[in-house]
Image (cartoon, rainbow, N blue to C red; front, side, top):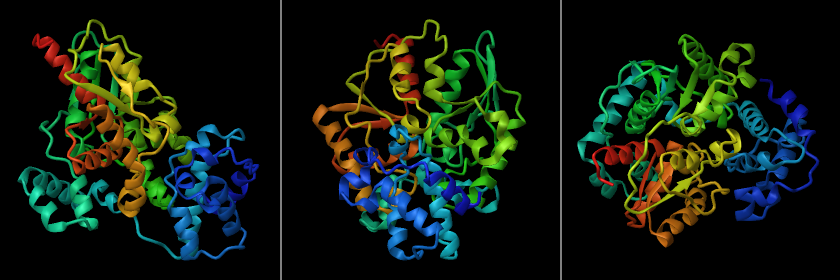
Length: 411
């Protein structure tokens, strides 16, 4: 992607109407034009035309964007803001001679460094050292990161291929992403087993695959496209009917991969599905879950709502299994996780998270489900910080748990 030509081509679609302003979290917090989509588009265009220097002030305005794409979802001119903010950050990196790459990308590497880091993360999760580290690290960046790390999952090694239970209706590839085996092993296992139960054979690639989302959001387009290209090649090697993502952020990038890579990713177009949206459309037969003890709320990640246009899919999935749930108030507003934003902009991220946590407290929510791992970790950390008993987990994990209770007769 050539950032300048991309900016010139896409920015002209913005007619400066301002209808995006009420939907932008950072504008809502600051009421500053430079912290709005319209303002950022003007800044990006000025940078591309040489009217602005790539200084710290400009970087602050561009990097404070959450890339939640709420503005894009309601824009009457259909401005491709997601691509514009990536192009703006890419040009900023280019003109300021680089910048820090997303740190979480190290986990994604399918090399000695990546494998060592993933093994170290799993060992740390199982060690029981987290509470001690919390006390020692305090409220700094390392302490904040430590509080986000989930406890060790229960699932052990999962097979690369799992046959369908009963008559096979199709085959799918389950996309774990670069951190799925470390941060969401329970989710991977639950997703695999649910897909098997509804008639799908499942491939779970052993190779570490990354969708490129973190690098893309940082404006590291070459690195992002490299990660996408590798994933597209690996996924294309499987004779499957669909690619199923467990994290809506990763799934959103996979669904748009052809727009970044062109024909190289054409085989993925129309075949990528977020797990709850996919299961909500399947014949679930006689699967019925036990009623939960306590209220369930559904958090809708921005990527699920604004990129995949899958608003309501998690609710529909739960309803199909007889699981009562309600939307978390303020689902139209970003929770502040936004990839690495919760680490790089802690004050803003925590302020955006606060209404979510307050809703959990006010409504006495027992379970909060979210289809994106970053959002789940961020909100869970906030709930723990307020000593709430709310359990934050992926919808398929809760669904499998309640299905098991029903089968044991624990209704």
